Image (cartoon, rainbow over all chains, first blue to last red; front, side, top):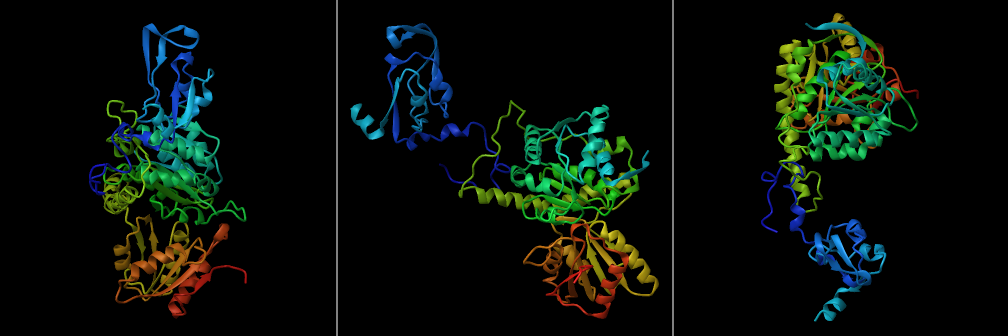
Length: 114
Length: 389
């Protein structure tokens, strides 16, 4: 963070400029990492809706993506978790109806990805 | 044209709210504040004001709702008393830090336990350290005028703090007096529209309100709040001067009644000051040099001005309608504080009276004056008026 402001320079009260939380990357808090298996995913959006940090991005696709049962899912689909903000709370894994998300310790996840 | 109306203190404040025409009022009925919102609700129902009135399920919700509306940009008001103030406390304490100019009439009532509906100042005196401006009113007329003044004081750009306007429960809130209600147009011009420099419904200029602030910023934000409180001393007088042009009345920090050549004075808040004035008049007829100081602006407290006003007397009796258990009573504390720098300190005596609505009579106040005149005072002793021994 840059040089801290004195009381005369701060905005009045505890007011802040908008959307400043984007600068605060909470991903460093994570001890468990959600490992998403796209082949088991039905793109039901449960994980997206439940994520308390809006850390699961989505996109709209006409051609579709391959998922659960080898089917192609069109329309709104989820993408890989944004690890800048994911705190590893595990709510997505808990809610996923097809068990497509597994929580793995960060150090194991890091080893596995090498 | 102003109009004289025979109304209660509660109705007088409702009249002020009618003229202010706030965008939002959220409140919950509580004795003895109920007739304020009751009367105001009838103004809403009859289309006399444009206010969105939000009946809520508790005072905690009432103040939460008022905070939301005020942050959104509305001129939002609330009103409460005693247990209601206690229940909304969590949110009340957040308002000054959020710098929301909410004006809340308070009808002073004793705090439970024992449960009691009558007047004392234990409710608002518990809220003197959290950053609300506090104005105490002697009668219905003052409650009406102070409410108008409070709006402009709260919303001033150098202040932006909430204001509580007090009146004594039942004694003033339910007692009928003749009240001069000033010309609607003149008052509306005086109060104007709230014109916030930023507000949440201004979607083109988004900002964040009420974030977490840890040891790195909390202290700095609180220092800003104290600066605003000090600014309120100046702005109070400026806004008062403007209101004087409509009312013809003065809006000092405190009223000085027959103090010019006085040797001893009583310092007392709110309705008891009215009784004390009668006692002063009668003792003056007997040739006794007595007077009265009635503080009006209690937060911020005008220490310097109060010291200058008080240091010329021989003895001062301070009457408090609440106890600060284990400490000197709240008004007495401030009077003592104000006189610390004085080279010729008057003799001081603290009196507690009227808790839970126990009456105080002219004869009681005369006894206090006699005690002060006799020199029988002890600044470290707290005395009790009309307490059964």
